[in-house]
Image (cartoon, rainbow, N blue to C red; front, side):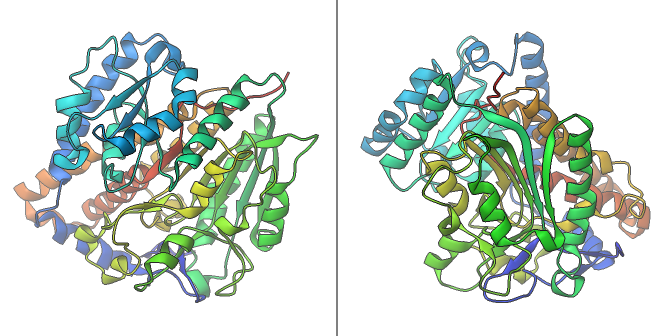
Length: 474
């Protein structure tokens, strides 16, 4: 499998075609070099913020007794400014707030009134260290609490998000988490379900070949070595009927602890906003024919469904879609704009999962496109940061099965994002001092690798309460 191009893990709704054509590696590298000479919205401030945040987080690690214990390091529900709507959300989530012995924080000003790093510095960081919560659950409409705010705050805290259409959904989620964690009989099995498609390269430019062989195969091997039972559906076995059957099944009434999927996420180009919100980010299965073969919100059964489980998904738009792609101001490829919505939104599939009264407790997924370059064969892609790309996935899975909270388990994604934000800013400084570096192939390869890995880590977000953890039986 050649590594001379860059592709995304997405396919188009209504077509057996990739979300966007592959970009030649050299052309992609040249586009990034050209972008270094242009102003890039928020990039410099985010890089500076990330550097300072790492220092604050290091101090937090030193002073905190146990970052995987919300009762010790604090938990809060963070909402936009107080109004009847935000007060109603707080009331709906009150069972969860009480269960966590947490606090409700109404932002004193609109969260969108400043760039995320400025808001965090002016408000979150100014809280008394004794009461500043490490676990933060965001709730409310996406226009009021944008994705960018979430992944910036996630550098210094463990952050999750809920964004539902109705108060009943918020209440259902809160009662589900509290009920599961307080029940003496509720538990999940020390068992994972891994689902990875592998489409022919003429359909998807080899993107799922890479994610299957260099992402899920190693993860399955790691879990098996640690004595975790794994049911693995790969390639021709990764069909919609198999996925529906497996996630709806249970052993003795108990669900698997983890469901991990690596597939294309569905992209819905065009102007039909309602269809985009209904289908974008749905999981493209092996038997996708342009219409059928997609695991979407409508595929989630009404009965018990992964009750108490955690779902991790690698797919374009799997967790949601921002109004503006974070990649466009770098690549300026018009194809990146074809699936952009009028406003940020959380994908329908994880929303349906989390609002299900007997469904999963948390979902980790991708916003914006995900890039298959990140899983190019390390033997062909001789870069030192291959471990950075796969390390956070292995780390998160290991910690989850050791009993960590999902927010703490996902910490490695945020740390790599912060480190590489600083590294990428340094790379930009090098270029500004000596633009001839942009003609050096090895320097450009380093730039591409930094850029890809940083954005992989940035765009994985947590949906649900960051304090939930897998609850195993005796």
